[in-house]
Amino acid sequence: MLLDVLSSHRATLELKCVGLNAELAWRSVEPSTLSLLGLVRHLADMERRWFRRVMAGHDAPARFSSEHNPDEDFDGAVADPAVITAAWQAWREEVAFADSYVTSAADLDITGKDAWRGTVSLRWVLIHMIEEYARHNGHADLLRERIDGAMGV
Image 1 (cartoon, rainbow, N blue to C red):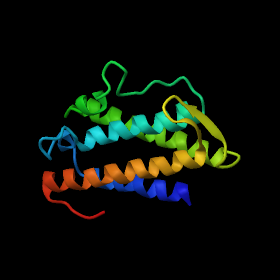
Image 2 (image 1 turned 45 degrees about the horizontal axis):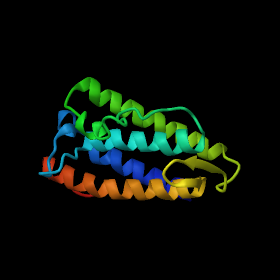
Image 3 (image 1 turned 60 degrees about the vertical axis):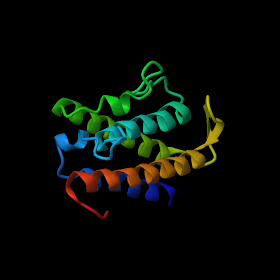
Image 4 (image 1 turned 180 degrees about the vertical axis):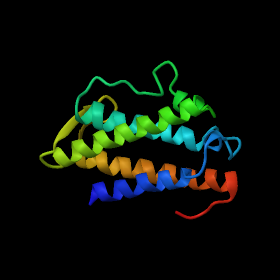
């Protein structure tokens, strides 16, 4: 059930971006620097952090942000076709890893270690990711509506 809800939120993010190219990088809700492309990059990093690093224990640094530039996921979201392609590829790879990890997990009570939260269960991570997508899908609603008036799912 949790994976189904998370998948629905992921699909909503994709739908908010359908039909856009360079517009994905528009910061359309001033003065915020958020963009749809920045959200894709940010959520790729969040998928990577929680599933690959925290739960699977991989040494996998963030793809788009760093300790020295924590906002690069948003700041580096520019209207370059290569940047757009790389963002979607990274997001899809991280989603695929997360889905594979969850479906192969023994149960939702397995744990991982997070430097900020301490010990977290897979159940907690799934709920947190649903929360993360829900919050950012609200941002995506506003961004997309400002770009071209598109509303709805």
